[in-house]
Length: 73
Image (cartoon, rainbow, N blue to C red; front, top):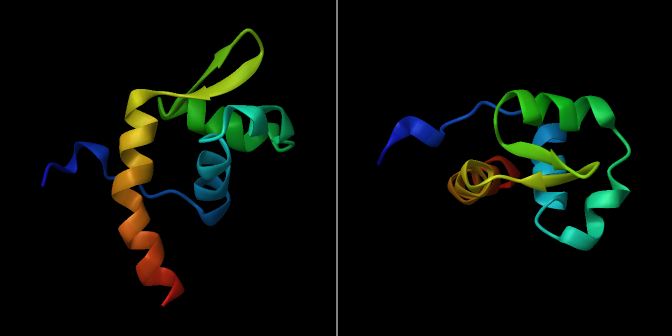
């Protein structure tokens, strides 16, 4: 596998990224510092004041899902 999308995100960052999967939920993100950190990593963009996941953010979320399941187990 390619390691281009291997990010070491905090649990709060993972939660924020998962929340951004649903466009309706984008306005419910209350922790601006989390969104800002994801923007700096290139995983999220702000479009008309609303955070939106980038294609890289989607790939990171999909690739990280396996790792998140391992942490829960």
